Image 1: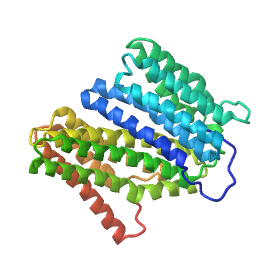
Image 2: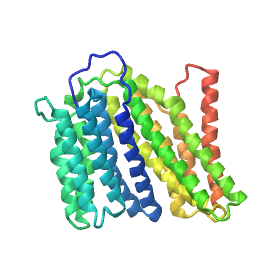
Image 3: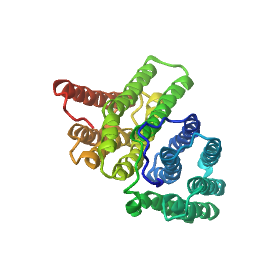
Image 4: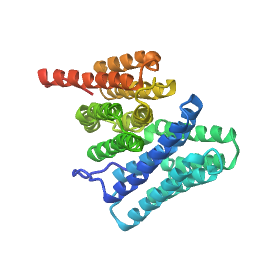
Length: 376
């Protein structure tokens, strides 16, 4: 997150073509993270994936917030954002071997990205203690140092860098209280991130089915059930949550108290959960009649449960009320996790998809009966 004096424009910002081009790199980065999880479903592998995902995600957040607070539709900023995209591409390329021979590439690319973003921010401004400065002088060097040392010191330094990145906006909250964000632009940017993650799940479903030989009727049913689940997760977010987030941003006295917990932190959970679900779906499409492996069950049911439970957190932070339907559904999904691996993969997935569809039907019915009902 970055800081700037309160904006006075009344017209909403539009997402620029440069930002959308930057997002193409994010598509590849998420694919690389998912591929890493495909190789191993264990807790250690999950932890390593989270540690490399956080800086990629936070670099995107920093870039998106910078574009929200400044006029970046000019030659200098376009070139700067393209340079940021190149750094992010280097990070994504390094992901498969980030804990091996490409650690310096991963850490060095992140350091360079943060340095470039700081230059863009402070161009024509006095250097002060704000988030871009902390990222360029603390977390960037930590990431570079981590890439130059062997394991397990690398994991420690990168984990520390992730904690600093996530904690900095909270620590510097007082410097953010007067910042005015463009609500429409931010909601669109973070919504696009969710779309990218969901798109990764669709790509994984289709690619797994395309590689199947032969493609059986059971395999096609697995594709259909996977798509229903992905579409159900899309519905949960985009039919009600986006308008709620926008409303919260527009009406908040201190917008950063919505941006930090709901957008920056909450969407880290949303996207991480979707990536986990995407990896689990490929296991089902690949082996629909076999019992669901425990690791795949954890990713599929655990990811869906985390996704739904996160709405409980975001609704509380926005409106101090509970998202009862979504928290209840999350509890049901997580309760099924211990027995999910005892079922054929297609059966387990079908039950999970039916639960998410039922949630959407219940919420739709609630709103249809009481238009003032709040589903967030």
